[in-house]
Length: 107
Image 1 (cartoon, rainbow, N blue to C red):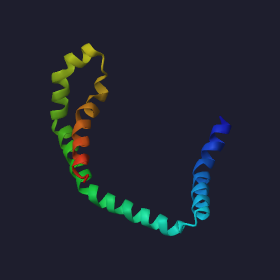
Image 2: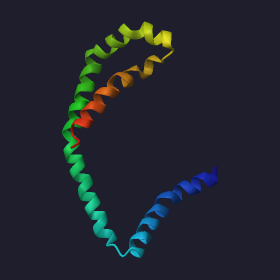
Image 3: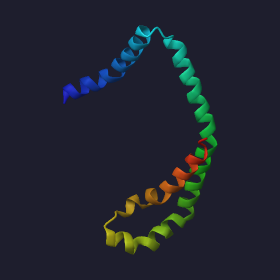
């Protein structure tokens, strides 16, 4: 177990070292490339942030209004027959909705 802990503690520094070494060998400007990637990451966050907020609000409204519990009670005979745990049903119901919302932002 200590070997796994030791290796996991070295994983990120080792990965960074490999990336920097590769960048130096290829004569790339490593820090400029990092900054370009960080800028792109921030742009992506800004693009999907409204979708995330809307999705979290919608999921919260469904949960606190009781609609989600009602739907689960409605389909519980089927999920009990299939042996699906009730606890994962909110995720199973909301997953297709969240996937659809995030695919709307892609161009």
